[in-house]
Amino acid sequence: RLNWAGGEHMMGGMRRRIRCGGRPMTVVVLAGGRGSRMKADKAALAVGGRTLLEHVLAQVGPYFDEVLVSVSPGQEVGASTPGRIKIVPDETPGLGPIGGLLAGLKAARNEAAAVVACDMPDIPVPLLRSLARAAAGAEIAVAVDPAGHYEPLFAVYKRSVAAGIEALLARGERSLLPLYQAFRTTVVRLDEALRLRNLNTRADYEAYLRESLGET
Image 1 (cartoon, rainbow, N blue to C red):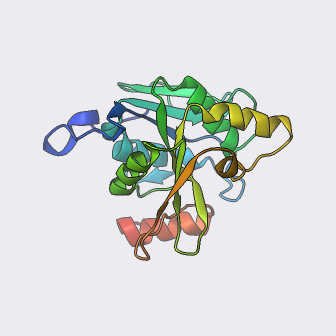
Image 2 (cartoon, rainbow, N blue to C red):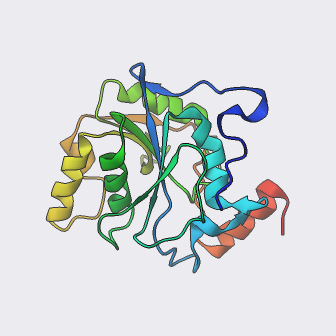
């Protein structure tokens, strides 16, 4: 069962929702995939007494008007989901993150959607706000690290980008990077001190538990 730790009214009150150009936004949490390097379903990993997916949802859910969780076809994420969270299966299995993003954008009821991967355990909400502001005048706003690498799974995409994703898939492309040439894209550069941590391997996961949660 997915537990959302009280939804919008956590820690003493409602949190200020993130907007794009003054309009409500959707957040798409990408939870699909086989986790081949982890050798486990990443979304189901235990973090502080809940699953990694629940851990991420607790951080981002209160800030958005619609919360979607993108999963692989047939993937189980719990017997039930609380509140506003909607499960969105990929239309085609095996496409990876690009398939999850496409499914999320097509299901979103808001024009702009923030996208985060559930294997990013610590979500910097101020960065999401910066991306949302940047996306007001663009179709994509994406984080870029100090080395110049894009973070395509920590970004804001407009629903209009879905057609471009379908065109990429039609020609066999699985990378999201070509979208940044095809659509109006703005970047938000990360400070040297800010690192978007990914849990890709069992070693990454165990290090995160030790360093961030004091677990072994």
